[in-house]
Each structure stands twice: as structure tokens, then as C-alpha cells.
Length: 311
Ligand code: BMA
Picture 1 (cartoon, rainbow, N blue to C red):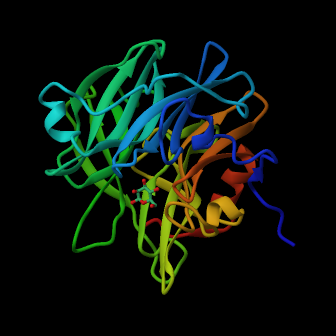
Picture 2: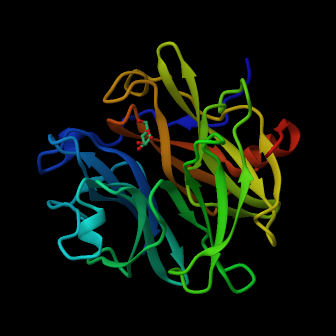
Picture 3: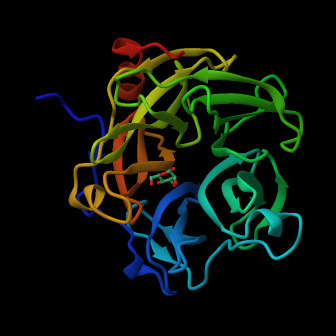
């Protein structure tokens, strides 16, 4: 039997709607980071309107999380954000750059889905910065450092012509973005053939930036969301060094197979540790939060030794 690259935490699911002190229907697709030695999780919850808000939970060990009494981020009341967040805020990703925590999240409205950028120093308050994409963008992750003096992001624009793919863009100030190009596409008749999108913010390793992404496969029974890995060149992240051919995680536990949307594992966050492991967090079936661990080197090895083409 092939050794699994992700070891599921045996106390999964680690956070569910029963742990939240205000009424929510789901707890999923959370960004996670470390602040002052504690783990901070920003999780998405559906309300019983079908629209989403973002809550915050904290943990000493990365597995036992306690939710704050109130949500952390709800749709904006002030323009311009209020125009674009009216249908909810979803799937937050957190990246710490030079001591500030930046949060990218999907803003839904009658104008479509686009990405809002917010920041916080300490997770006590949050300040919106800018709407950093037009409509039809999701899954935006920031690299944790500037590269060649520019901020860098991966995202996933929608396109009718080509399947949903991963693009890279650059910015001098986090507000104005450009120099965009496609870096990775789905592979036909492969586990990620229908669409791919960035998952957790990239992690620096000696051999490249490790990116954990999601891939979707359409079946007669609906779509299956799985996770895979890609390695970007450290100095030039537009260059993909290698992409792992195999998925690293697929829906298997009952709460990943059945939920709000069946057969989904979806990540917005992973926390690298000093011992060379990472903690990976994923939403199970758009309903609960799960965690697992991996050895970072093993994920990089998969990219390099068992690869599929990037484009
Ligand atoms: C995607 C997004 C994710 C969700 C996934 C599976 O399009 O909406 O937030 O986890 O579908 O439903």
C-alpha cells in the first residue's frame, strides 16, 4: 500500500457548527496562521440564508480551536465594499508579510465574485484595503514575501474558453496588480481535469515555493474536490518547477464524503512548523473543518519525482 502523504488528525473534524456560539449552518474553508505562538483560524460559515460570513477561532496546539463569541468579518456596510460583498464573504486566506496579516477573501454580489483584501496587525480589528480583482476571480493567495521588490499572488480567473486555471500577478503596493500570466492548467482526463485553483498560501522551501492547490473532477455523481501540490521557482515563481501527478488528499472520511456539498476537501491554509512538517487545514464537504500533518520534503519530492506537465 502507498504511504499517505497527509496524516489525518484522529480528532477530526476539529471544528463544526456546534462549536460556534452564534447561529451558523457550516464551518469550513478556513485560512490559518500563527500569531504570537497561537494558531488563528478564520473560517467560513454559511448562514441559513445560504450566504456566508467569516468567524475566528484560536488554538494553542493547532488542533483544539475555540471560537470567538462574535463573527470576525461580515459583509461590508460602507461603499465601495458594500456593493460587492452583499451576497457574502467566503474562503479567507491569511498571509503574514513583514509583520502584517493580509486576508484575501471572495466577495459575492449581484456583480459576481471578486477578491477583497483586508489587513490586521493582531486579529483584534480588521481593515479593508481594496478590491483587488474584477469579477470572476476566486482563490487568491499572496506569497509571504516580496520577490524582486514586488508583491506576488496566485489566483484563478474564470474563462469560457479554457478551463479554470492558476495565474500569477505582481504588485508594487498590493492594490495595483499586473504582469499577469497563466502558470498552470488542468490536465485532461486527470483528477484535476475540470478546474484547479490555489489553496493555501505558498510555503518557502529550499527547493521552491510549495503550493497546495485544489483540483476538480466531474463525475456522473457530481464534482469531486481533491488537493495536489506544485513547486514554483523561488526567484521566479511564474516558473513552475514541477507539479505532482497524484493527489495528496481526497474525500474519504464520512464528513468529507457527505455534507453541505458532497465529496469535497478544500484548503485555504497550511502552517509550516520548525520541524519540517506542516499542518494542513481543509473544509470537509463544505460543512466542517479538518486538520492533518505532512512532511514538507515528501510533498516536494512528489512534485519532483512523479510529475505532470504544468501547462
Ligand atoms: C467552490 C467554492 C468553494 C467550495 C467548493 C465546493 O466553487 O465555492 O468554496 O468549497 O466549490 O463546493
